[in-house]
Image (cartoon, rainbow, N blue to C red; front, side, top):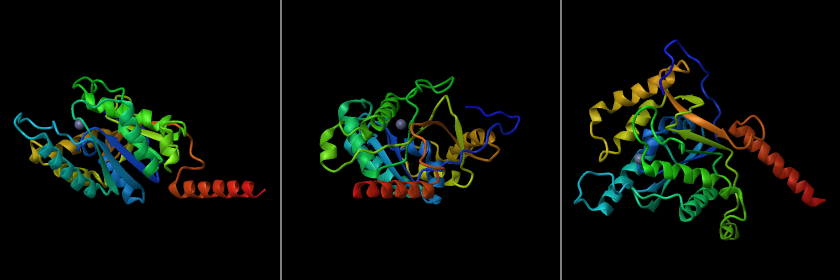
Length: 274
Ligand SMILES: [Zn+2]
């Protein structure tokens, strides 16, 4: 989205999750997406996890190529990029590239991921983006991964009756409190990523099989970030549509959240003693 040229129109977004999960369709989506915000949060002490629904096995132009070989290359590229950003790990769900569907099988896989890592916030593409602003069609897999992520977050991940065998197996329900939707036509928040935009470019360079003009990558990414940054008066920004599902127990700082959770646990223990 184009920023105002008349100076900053909003303040930088400062809320930070203690734990976050990025859910995307393809290897490289997360790095073209919120990588600089992820790096900023990780540098500040957050723990991040990346989930790729497919391994990008259709992401080439050679019809004779072996899709399994391409998938292996792209997984290796994504793992290298994730290490640059600083994620604790990457999960590949091995769904079909180009044919991703928001079905119950994918939802269960995503609920497993969410209940295992237990993020405060999930980052995904905006499921309402069919067209990118005034040009470009949002890939069908991006839309499918986006709505699958939303449906997994709410209500499935928090509902013990949803996929009940998961709770019986020890994967307790979990409440994700916020969604951060990127590639949105309705951004509501911008994060200052001046300090980490270089990491985003470095992460993208790891996707060598997908980058056609590596010499132009740095300027291209910094130009996008400059537009978003202008709205908040900084050199580089990333934009999100933020959906708050549940308010924080207190002021939202990770430390404060831990304190509030400890308080709630103590209160529960006290009530059980009675
Ligand atoms: Zn993609």
